Image (cartoon, rainbow, N blue to C red; front, side, top):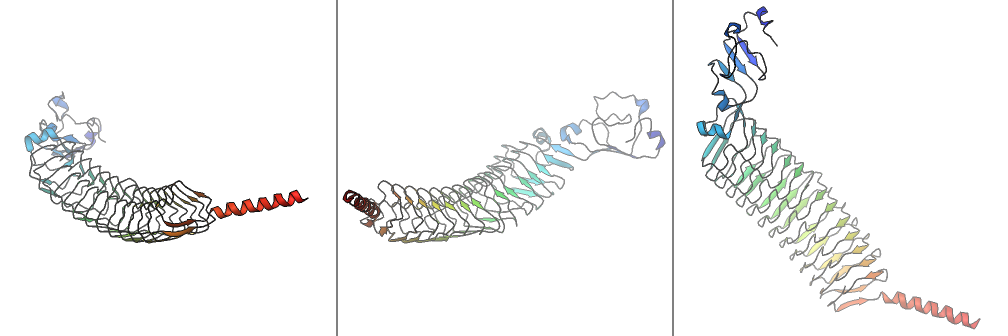
Length: 425
């Protein structure tokens, strides 16, 4: 970096590059507030200022040969320029157009970042054209833009903050950038007209309520997914009919597809080992599902109120079925419990009124309270290997015979014979 005492050795320098506010200006009074001795002034053909500066501040610069390379566009700047974002703008700052009445915006080709709440609640905004290699989109950036129907995001985007398009009620389609690894919390929540989503080749995480209550979404096809790290990712997508998720996804979080009334087909990664509470609760159109072979436990209300489910294949890897897992699956007819099952939770198959046959393995030891309550079609003898039957376990199950007491009777007879033989001695 040249200083006042060394620049004399470079008399033919025409361009001055200034990288920070503290850099040497060589007598050029860039800001009117600066006191500089004119005797020390060196004239340059062009002065390039590379550090970030708001547009309103550049208006105070006295030199016409100054070029500002990294402008910040603020809410104050919109008073002067409106939607005409100046050239060399790199950042559109937080709340820049918040609650404004703009109808369209063109993002210049130099912008790399749009701040938090920048266009939130711009209810008349219908057109957004992004010309830049945009990388960062902040929290609630386009949230509640109720007039926005579509937007084309460049593949350079690597971050979208929470609630980016939350409650954009007319947004109908979106193609997500290939460089985007994570879909944040509430990203498209309450986008009630969203029909089509093109996912990137790889998704590392999908946040809580990311697509919650996207009432028009009909299908989900994710080429490669590694994590649903939050709850309710597709909660209450009532028109969602098919889900195909490939990759090394190992877990579905709680209420992930809860209340997806129209869901009929689910294909997911063979790496799935955990399906959390209420993951498919109230999926009323789901008729059958094949679970991956690595699942060890079916959680609370996992398939509760799947009233059209008639068949489910439970892999042998499952050792526990938790409370209310299949409660009120009124069309479930036949169940083959896995060989390694040891416990059935509270109300596990309660009110499965069509359940007529269930194959119980010898490893099953505990049947929880109300487990088969009101299974009016069930015909089954409870095997002697079961050691605990909960309260009202088979209430209103008229054809179930509990033969567990045979063990107790046999044990009593055995001790009685021993006692008689002892008295004879």
